[in-house]
Length: 340
Image (cartoon, rainbow, N blue to C red; front, side, top):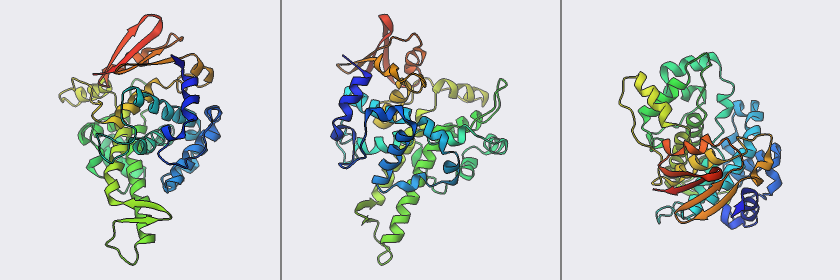
């Protein structure tokens, strides 16, 4: 049994375990205590994979401080997700024996999963009105999304996502509506990765436009990766959709409610992101990073056990309501989390 702080430090020392790239940016534990350093690590990681274009957005650049404030949580979630995936015996180098690499998808999904906060935290009334009426059609205009494919909707159907997006934009109980950052972020990731591919293709394939797989600036690009982009996008979209909240919206639409969690281990990236993002403590204890030294983590057969010293653990208790996972609360704020 170790504290999360110790788990993080041990993991950081073994780059091969947490990084898809051999020459990943340097990462130190103290990075988690600095917003600027955490944000720089995220951007450098994408740049290393030739995907720096995912951050080239005038709105994001104008509101970069919002994402910078979330950056320590994002990096912490990234590390915690690797730890959880190992506990759940998910192969970090492949998924279901296929060539698709978990660590590759994890870096795409996790390090981008809060990008949409730039839109959620500063919505304008005009955008919210458009979302209430047009949902997914409106988000394409708001977030400058050109590439939009139904493949991003694997966990939740396009119809469910559209309802969730439009209803979250409505003012309720005296509170202003929001642009859901998960839905916006997932769609933005797919769009930006497609644009990034096309920019590389235009630069490299002028002489032979029939080529769809090629090397550009020492990096391999292929249209076969599009399906990976959609898996990562779906993970971001689905990790922020709570079934309980969605059911409230479905009732308002006189539609049948969902009776079971939709996020499960059949989609490991979405599964781990939902777990890690919920459990990750920096998001909850924004001004008390020492909290990482107050949570103990233990691997057990089929899962892991968390020991909390803090009394506020409602977010852990409610996991099983929207993620298909077993959660058993024991004495002294200890939680046993195992796959079904």
